Image 1 (spheres, one colour):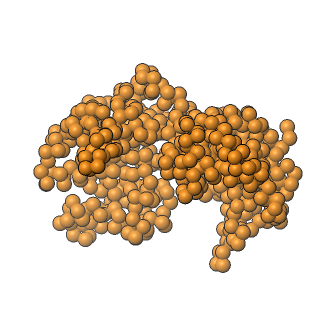
Image 2 (tube, rainbow, N blue to C red; image 1 turned 120 degrees about the vertical axis):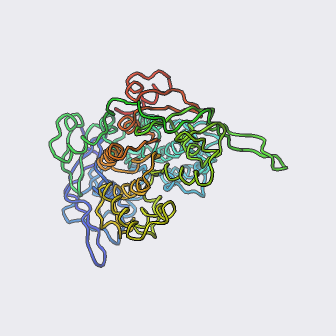
Image 3 (cartoon, one colour; image 1 turned 180 degrees about the vertical axis):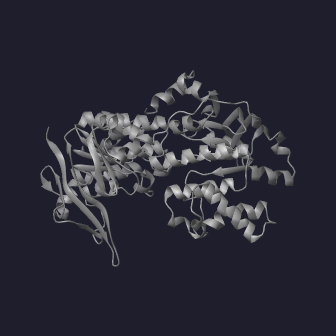
Amino acid sequence: MDKILEINNLVIDFETKDSSFRAVNDISFKIEKGKTLSLVGESGSGKSVTALSILQLLPEASVRYSEESSIQFESNQIIASSKQFLTSLRGNKISMIFQEPMTSLNPYQKVGHQIDETLIIHRNFSKKKARQKTIDLLTKVKIPEPEKKVDSYPHQLSGGQRQRIMIAMALANEPELLIADEPTTALDVTVEKVLLELLSDLQKEFGMSILFITHDLNIVKRFSDEVCVMKDGKIVESGEVQSIFNNPQHPYTVKLLDSIPGKKEALNLENDLLLKGNKVDINYPIAKNIFGKTTEFLNAVKEVDIKVHSASTTGLVGESGSGKSSLARALLGIEKSEGMIIFDEKDIKQLSAIETRRFKKDFQIVFQDPFGSLSPRMTIGEIVGEGLKVHEPNLTKNQRKERIIKALKDVELEPISYMRFPHELSGGQRQRVAIARAIILEPKLILLDEPTSALDVSIQMQILNLLKDLQSRLGLAYLCISHDLKVIRFLSDYVYVMKDGNIVEDGNSEDLFESPQHPYTQELLAASIA
């Protein structure tokens, strides 16, 4: 079969006035027409740099290619080619879908205009013809009510819809090569499945080739023909997908495959009941009359019953908008709700000021984005120890430092981290800091809000194993919110499935995953790429 893209001996250095860094180190691969090749590896492995080099989107002032480096598209050399040639390629013969559509789409322009623009530039369409083509594209990528959505701004669309807009924009000129850079990150499992199936269908329709960049090996297994595994700027292993998955040769590939979460051990719910929500109901005002009185509500959580047992993990799954986060905030006492919430045998709505303070100490949170949840102006020691100042103000400076160092050791961080700042740590290290901040107060329950979604697969596994180890050693209970069913299955003893504010199914983790009863649970599991 004819190759459409061939990369040979690609070496990419980033140079500054004072230093030089090799991001890509002598890699070679080719993509055949109509086929999908995946680049996999952890953050910093060189995947995205390689992708950006194909379109020559790396900063000219600092990037350097070796003399032997070659990127050929349809036998045309891309490196050092003219701006005119590159303009004819970008968004035309080669298109790219970026990881985060919200940062890739212009927030000040309607999405329809942004698609119209590429048709007008590359295909010389009239405004009228471009608009009709745009609507046709939105229909093709299954955007509901495309005639209306074409006049929407990016912020008015859901994450899945924005990603479909990016796909429509990328396909506008029927490219021969599509580069998809982590296009499903942070999407719900059902949205992820729909988008991947959409890409597969469009690939067949247009006969295009795809370079798929991801850290999710399950996606690779299902949707790719060939795979290249990257580490530290090098390709350490490559070949047909089935061959790599069935018989990996390189230790790093083996490590990545071993990092896919498995099943949780047998369930034990004999532990004491720690948290109970009874008929928890949450309404958000969405419309008011001219007198300021609320006339319409959104019933986000509908009389939900939920239980969390001591020293166990309760999983809460469902798509965006299902009510998971609203319910969790209500259980924390930071979201107004109807119904009863009992924590450690006490109604949290009836707590005194002193009891409320104790409740807040006993119920901690680990957030989704470790970098966003850590103050960049505070040292790691200050961040981890902040709760001690509030809840244990009588500790001496030395006592507080001892507790902080212990917490850092508990999450397997070196004591020297005490004096560092968040930007000096890796993503996995920052998440360990967030966990240390939660456990230092010796809580009874920790809310895990998408605790691994922003992490590479091997780092994700390290964090999951750490959480299980801490639970075993410290007797912690977890309430884990995640759209990643593999994470839920690995961590959870008991699972609740939410849809449209309702609990549609709950049960022991293994029973629910092996034999789901509700159609929505079956849909979620079917959408989860095994």
